[in-house]
Image (cartoon, rainbow, N blue to C red; front, side, top):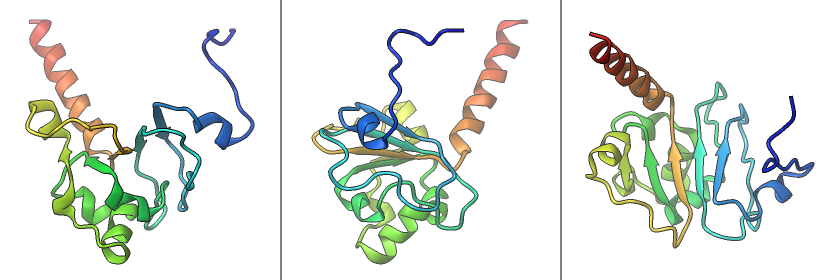
Length: 143
């Protein structure tokens, strides 16, 4: 099967993310995949949970300078490595979160400004919520 003509492959991460609008980090890295200077413009950066203690796919020092969102504000900041490290080493606090998934869906959280990077950190709760919502939708629409 051929790749869609819009797909472009890169051999270096710098080439892949340089002009990106969205960067989906889906690794099991315990250290940052992105570094200063890699992104040419503000982007939405997403990170999903990994099995590495204090995993952080972006530098924790970036967190205080970003619009930060997560899947659930009551649990994610205490579990996500970059948030824990940003709180302990860079003066960030969970009250600085712009919003969580329920707040984004309900319209209670502000949308990212994109004057700076937006970061969405998931520890898996959002995926569970989507799966439950889909099953409820499917159940109700097949009756």
